[in-house]
Image 1 (cartoon, rainbow, N blue to C red):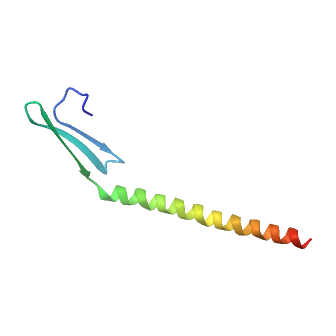
Image 2 (tube, rainbow, N blue to C red):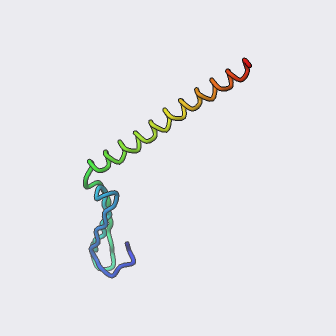
Length: 77
């Protein structure tokens, strides 16, 4: 970001939802700012991550119960 020759630079990330901007304040002084441009993209990303974690937890719980049933069946034999 700071290695370019341009004075005013604006970079965006996470599908355009966050930004990082540099601007020359005065001769030899560079100011920087960052923030959220599009909160909808952030909400979608967090919703997808939440769903993935929830599916993983449900799958883990189901596999754990299945394992417990197999152990129970084997101990009765």
